[in-house]
Every structure is written in structure tokens, then in C-alpha cells.
Length: 592
Image 1 (cartoon, helix red, strand yellow):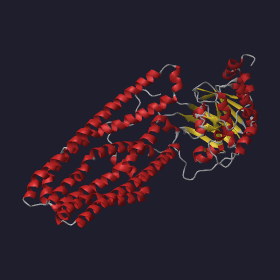
Image 2: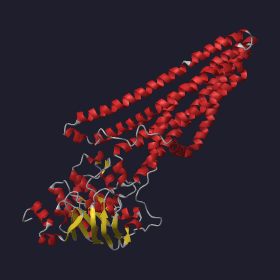
Image 3: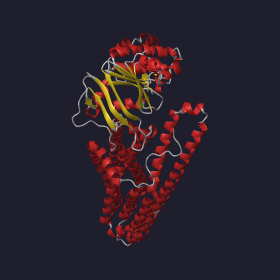
Image 4: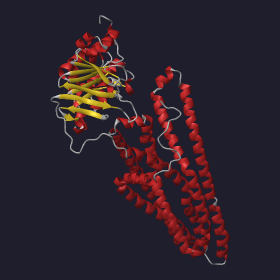
């Protein structure tokens, strides 16, 4: 669960790697370059229409009105109206193109991130909690949407508008334009100060936003635990602390933005005063026309509008690059376990599985979880692994599925080293029933097919019949809807569904990791009966605390402190009177 020390992996004082992040963001735009080219066309046309309005106004004042010709004035006013309509039309087409392009980029990015994360190994998920990853896919990608749909294009348009407007003004009155340029150094100084002071604040706000998303995800998932221990207020207080930090950081950022905006907007009336004061005198002297004076006043907003939007652009760019850097960190992450260039493919397991002197620990400075583990599981046989909690039982299956790699020793399937076997074909051949069962929102039938509608229903019915669970599913309709995480099912019901789900794909090897934990005696008997049928059809590895489920296993390993302490059949281990025998008697009594 979240604590006060929760972090999203980015130091608020850390500098953004703009070069690497830019490459990532630019790469997202490449597939949609046609959309951006189309948007560029609409930008040019809408900008031209916008810039042409003051020129038409100048023509009306300086030429059409003094001419005294009503038709000329009517045509000029009509041209002004038509130009305004064209500007609105081009702006609409630009907006729609940007929305479509931006949505397409965000959809593709989320698909790419999900596909990439699904390919990463378990150490990645140990490092990044679910809440943090949810923030990456949802919150951070949303931060990029505004960059692609508004900011990037608007900055480009603002640059064009500023340069063209300045050029037009200079063309009609170089002296007045140069005089107006005296305010630009102030703009540069104010912009530089704002950019320098606000940079770290934007990163901090982005960090805290991600932290709040992660906090909510993790605590809502643990709502039953919080309510059971009356910890609702504790969770609310912790969220209040994070919210207050975000509030203070965002307030400081907004304060700086307001000061910057007000400082810039003050330059507009100053510029108008210069035009009216100095330019008005020149107009009286006949140096410039009244129309030119009006045109300059109308162009003031066009000239300073890009500067007004600068604070907003900077804010969005900073947020986007902060989010983009975190997305880049995930996308650059590579799985520790990958296929070799020419892997071997498992089409069928003909001989069996062998662990040969395997040693395993989860980090270089950690203790050994497995120590010199060796066993052989022939095809068609069953192996049970028992022992105390934390003894290393589940680590055996983690290695078999290539979730991790051992530091020493070899794992072989049909005599082929596990690293040489294709990961996809390995997991196609071996099924897993995990003790932490996850069921998707949907029907029981959909869950039995792992939400893959391409699988025929007949495969589900065959699996149910093979392990003799027809009676169970007569009372639990396959069309029954399961809510999120299967909270409307009991633990036993979920484990039965999970067992059948592993059977649907008809994999040759089946691994049951605590498949009978936390269930009632009736369901335990039901699963035990099903497992006895499975043993006749499958090569099986059963990890169990309940020893009643493994009596008929062909071989039993008792693992303690990462070592194999005892091995043999159920009967042999009882006769030896060792640790296994003591475990068994603790569960079933002396005459069990």
C-alpha cells in the first residue's frame, strides 16, 4: 500500500532529458505526418485570412470611404465578411484535423505502452506498482494530447503570425514598426525569468498528479482491508497531505503564470499608446494615413497574441516533456529475459522436465532462495512440492515459466536448456493455476476462454467433462456475469473456475500453485477429485500446503530454506517419520 514515501520515480529537481524525450515524442508523430501536413495547410489558410482583415480595414478607411462610391464600399465590406467566414471555416477544419490526429496518436501510444508492458518481466512489476503504471498510461498520455492537438501547431502558427504581421507593419510604416519594437526586449527578459523559475514547478506538479492517481488506485483496490481495520481516515489524511503538496505547487505555478501574463498584457496598452501618441502626430502631419494607424492598432492583438500565449505554451510543453520522459523510460525498458536469435520451439514434450543443481536469488545482495535444487519429472508423471511458507516452492515455478533466470544450474525440457527454448512455445505448452486468482469482468464462459472469443465453446465443455465438473457448472451457469476481480464469487468457486481455465487450452504440463488454498471441505473434495483425473492425463507439478491433494503424486519434494530436505512418494515419506510425516500428522492427526 501507499505510504508517505511513495514516489513516482522522478525527482522533482531532476532535469528533463529534452533530447531523448523529443526523439520519443517526434517518433509518435511520424505515422500521422499526413494529418499534420493537412493541418499545416489549414493553418496557413486560416492565418492568411486572419492577417488579411486589418489590410481590408485599411482599404475601407483609406480608399473605399474617401472615394464616396457606395458600390466600392459594399464590395470591400463584403470582402471583409467573406474573409471572416473563410477564417472560421479554415479554423474549424484545422481543429477537427488536429482532434482526429491527436486521438489517433494517443490511442496508438496507449496500445504501444500496453503491448510493451505486457512483454516485460516480473522484476519490472515489482519496481512499478499498478497505480503508477495506470498513471503512466492514462494521466501521462493525456498530458501529451494537448501538446499534439494544440500547442505544437499553435506555436507554429504564432511564429508565422508574428513574423508576417511584423513584416506587413514594417512594409506600411518602417518608422512606426521600429518604434513599436522597443517593447520587445522587455518581453524577452520577462519570458526568460518565467521559464527559468517555473520549470521545476511544472515537473513537481506532474509528479504529484501521478502520485495521487497511484494512491487512489492502490487504496481503492484495498478498500475491504481499510474498512475492516477502520483505516479510512488514515487513508484520507494521507491523500490530504499529497493533495496539499500538489495544491501549493500548482498555486505557485499559477501565480507565476498570472504575473507573467499580466506583465505581458500590460505591453498591449503601452504599444497602443505609442501608436496613438507618436503615430497620431505623424497622421496629423500626413506622414501616415488614418487607415495605416487603424491597421497598426488592429495588428497589436495579432502581434502580442503569441506572446500572451507563451506562458500557456511553456506550461504545456513542460508538463508534456515531464510526462514524455516518464513514458520514454518505460518504452526504453527491455525485458531481462528474451529469446535467443534462433530459439528451439516446443511442439510437444516427449521426455520431461529436469532441474539440475539450480541456485536462485532475486538480487545480488539477497539470500539464496533455492540452493542446489535437482529433480526429474518424466512426461505423464506428477510432482508435488511442499514445505513451509517462504521456503522456495513458488520460485521453482517462476523459473520454469522463465519469469526469472537462475544464477547457477540448468533447467532442461527434453534435454534442451530452458534459455534456448522459445518463450512463447514454452508458455503455450505449460499451464498455470496460480493461488492469486484474477478473474476479468465478464461471463464465466468468457473467463474460461481467457476473454478470447476466438476459442470455440466446445473446448470449454470438453475441459469441464475431462475433469468431471459438470455438476458444479450446472449450479454455476456459464453465462453468469462476474464483476471485477470476481468479488461476487467465493474463493472456492474462483479456484474451480481457474482450474478449468487452465484445462481449456489442453496444455501438456499443468502447474498448480496452491490451487486448494482457502477453500471449504466440499470444494476441496471437488478439486481433489478433478486433480486425480488430471493426473491421468497431464504431466503435473503441484505446490500445496494441504497434503490431502498430493497423496497420489508420483514424487513429493519437501523444500525448506531453499533446499530439498526429503523426497519420495506419500507412503515412503510417512514411513521415514521425517518433516513430511510431522506436517501430515499436524494436519490430519496421528491416524490421518
